[in-house]
Image 1: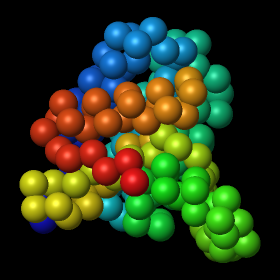
Image 2: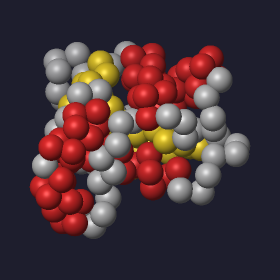
Image 3: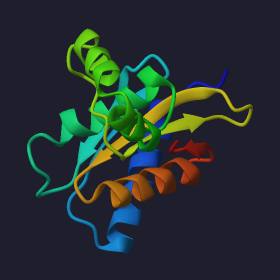
Image 4: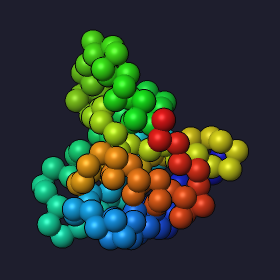
Length: 143
């Protein structure tokens, strides 16, 4: 299994910020979690609000916890809100079922982590996450 290194996490964040600049997005917060949902790296741009660490990590954590990108997690939350509420409860409120959390897959298709981004619209957050993951040589799985 491929390990998600700090160097790769920083590469993901840098490329996500570059995509944000290209798209002229609002200031972003980017969390990169490993497969065990441990924080590998977080950065926020100047002007990003104070909850960006928790929100971005919650998107990535939810993707890892449920095993699907947060686009599907959000749809799942609408279809079965009681189940997602329960998952959020047992996780200590760490799951944020909103688009912007993208699974990171290695070349064999194994999930090695997730990226969560918060700061602009959910679709734009997701686009920046995908760009960051792909720039680092991994496959993005938004769900």
